[in-house]
Length: 191
Image 1 (tube, rainbow, N blue to C red):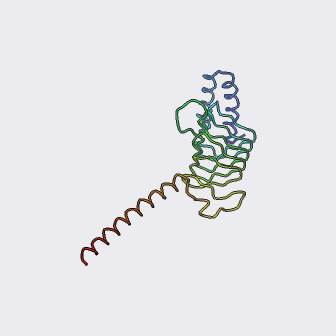
Image 2 (tube, helix red, strand yellow):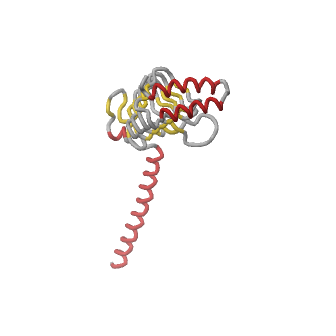
Image 3 (spheres, rainbow, N blue to C red):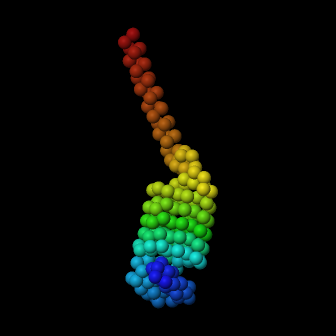
């Protein structure tokens, strides 16, 4: 009972009840009161499963349309946030048994599969399949089912990045051919 994460979750359950019953003012008032006492901000619209642990929770922010599955662990400074102001689903959905390291940011409306691990200070902007460990900024998978991915797979290029590289290579090859022609023309002029 001495963990601020437990207090925040209890307050959230109450605020969420009022939110679901369209008593938005009282729901927000309760969530803001909880934030004042716990330093954990959970929007009353967020859907939280059972068995969640918010450990050392100072600075945790969970947005309005976020969904957190059962038995997730969230460490201090984590944000489950949106990337826009549009209406509808804007925040991430975490599957069951997800661990989110200290300071990690998961931003956008996408799903993180069951049993995933997001490293401390990672910035996750894209969905993850189940049983994946992701690290970095932006976060990329480095393990699947506990097995380390080869470097070219773990930090591989996105299709857009690959196309940009191919376009750049084609552009440079055209420049090289043009320069080769110019050199050949100068050689021919000398002879």
